[in-house]
Length: 109
Length: 113
Image (cartoon, rainbow over all chains, first blue to last red; front, side, top):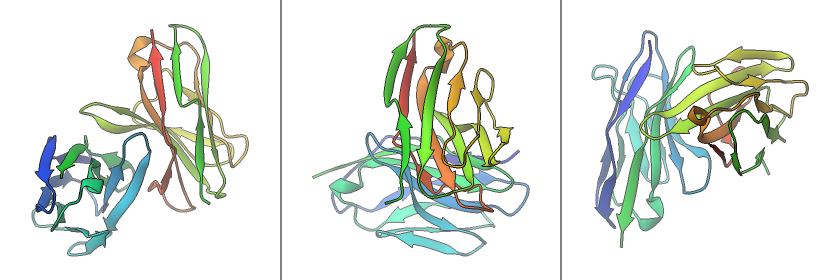
């Protein structure tokens, strides 16, 4: 069945550091891929998405590219801020929706 | 403002005592779903509903019931809660023709003793 694997956290970075959170997927069809962000005490918010191979999703300085050849959708940001501290979930949608386990990011001043 | 409202936000209760977590949305979305979030497991879907009076099991439906009598409401019912249902629960919605959650509630933390 479909599944999503993302790098285990927690990830701790200093402000302005470069961020990568790895995500790989297994799917039988042609899924859409997503990154969601969860701030403390809140529900998930859609951060970005890509619906087909080579698409790049971007939002708030975050980017992720749908790589079919490596079945990956890694999240990147060039310069993180303290306000980016949150839990990040990679997800795919095919005939159903699958979420990764989440990666907690802490950004220190 | 788009809202998905869950109640209660926190609940501590005992094994076997029936409880209901309500979910209400103001976006006229057809698709609603319930997830539970557990450490190391991410979100797992419990039940979903494509429209009024249409509900289906997700990945982990055992021990839960739902109903969809009106479009805006999608309550989650635990008839006889057990400690393994201690978790963080989220309701989510999506507009028609999509099962990709667009709006989430702020969560309900249940502790079953």
